[in-house]
Length: 521
Length: 45
Image (cartoon, rainbow over all chains, first blue to last red):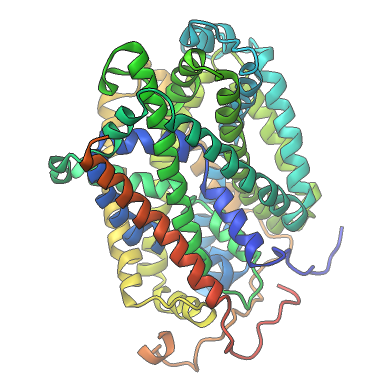
């Protein structure tokens, strides 16, 4: 094991970074979440809160992540520890909180990916038959009642194990030869595959009715606060922000590198793919509704797992050339998911490398094997679907949102780093951010996200989730959050193999005096 | 499709894809700053 510091890994250039960041942002949620959320929250009118959320929260928090990772040159715990400075080393714990969320998400995201890969194969002979819902929960997942089971389902176990092996290999290969190479191959392939799918969908009978349903504006929805919260949620969860990914990815950019220009490309590319997914998914749903002789509003399963693994297989079965359509859809889902998955796990791997002073291969294998074992035990059994649903609900809606609120409040209000981070962005970037950026990340983001967090906690406490027993939600939902918090505290107090505190940020702040408008302009 | 749905389909594409194209063009024209402060060469972090 080397005892001297090694040069930090880097993307090979701007394009590699942009493709990798887009690959991380464009994930399962773009395909199966955005279309349904837009439809249920005002249709065409949803575009307005969606764009407002993108400009006032999505892009500003993305820039905040970039600035922290790039200025303080590390995975989330390293970057926050350095940002905290002499009196704020404890800020490392914010980084570990983000790392633990990524760790938990990685466990079940892999399982969904395994389903997508299985369904890609099933598409060739339309194996789900005439009853896709019964096939998914019965024949494929073999779901039983809520509980803890060690009855493994081979159809999930095998692809899940295979995905973990490939993921470990990619992480071990490093930033340029692993992550970037995967994104450079898969992202263009994903766009081409999905474009073909969309064009095919547009020529299906009933496609226009589907697009009518998605794009006809319901102006009354704009007066509903829940619609605005839905828009902020969609943007927030879609951009891979506030749980360490973009901090880690930005830390692999060379110091003399543009941040905000590529950030705008990443944010708009992510939203562009969401619009494309909306068109493809609703044109397809229009066909399905026409075949059933019902209106779009009468269809069930318009988002999430239900849309992907029940509604879409049903549609594929009724479609001329359905096998190819199914391959395109599930292939796209698998590629979008994989490029996001490796970014989630790189957060954990990079943090472990830096804290324990080990190489990337050792970290990839260590993190990968521990994650794979837990993932297989939890999600390849007959109770995997329920556990996944509950852990996802808590990790996303409580974990990530809490991480974002903590980050913005502690960085902007407690450590007062807003001017320094804005100075950093403007000194290295071609697109300049004004003082409004500090207001957006320091006030708008924590207020909106804080409201979302409180609202969700109250709902989960009062109403429970999915009709599941309280003990189950306590173990898998609140238990997941408790695990994240306890692990955060434990990892924060473990000594560093090589403390990262002997560090000088570049570019240096202007001589010891308060930053002026000229400095940050 | 109804005219209003077509309008919002086109509007979505123009605004969001237009934003993507505009940001790509902006980046292509100004990919990096030319006036970095001294230092910032990547050796050891």
